[in-house]
Image (cartoon, rainbow, N blue to C red; front, top):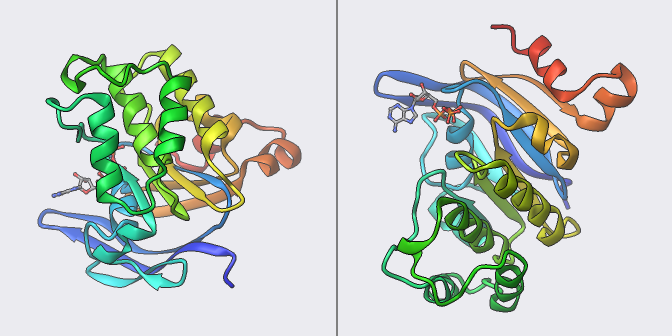
Length: 234
Ligand SMILES: Nc1ncnc2c1ncn2[C@@H]1O[C@H](COP(=O)(O)OP(=O)(O)OP(=O)(O)O)[C@@H](O)[C@H]1O
């Protein structure tokens, strides 16, 4: 059984006016919290969309748990989009029920526990939730899936520091790293550093570096932001 959850081999992704990823190869370990970091437009979201099978590469090969990533990979992957994908007319409870209907692996009990932990009112309409509570609900929908791989695109973006803190804590409390791997893109590098195991730095459609966060601290005595500044020159 492979110890890698995701492998990119010579992957290129072109959009009409842009090469988003240029012959990229890397492998990501199982059972870790992995951060994809890098400047705007560097290719981070494209990596997640390719991994979720939502877009297709122009060249190269992507595997998840040894299987080629395509649309059917949805049964193995939970994907939290950076967009607001919730239906406004549903209540929180209806949103949970709807997702439980979509995904056979959806754990309604766990979703209920997370609702209580995050103090979300099940009877509230999504349209009446604050941005922070919509962000929390999206996190619950992703973490309640019993899948080996959870992908989160900018889960902290646009949220205030209190919400960001509660979301970061919910990630460590509710992800089961004995069975699951989390890959997230983020610009909030210093805030998520304490929970990250592995970091991949992306710039201009290329992987510039990959590191274990503990190694930067113990071998180099640096923080993640310092490492990024060195590896991603502006
Ligand atoms: N659907 C699309 N059509 C055309 N170009 C796209 C599309 N999606 C992404 N791109 C381009 O591909 C490049 C990589 O985009 P991507 O969204 O992967 O970057 P990112 O690192 O996630 O950026 P950000 O941090 O701003 O979210 C960018 O130049 C972007 O403009």
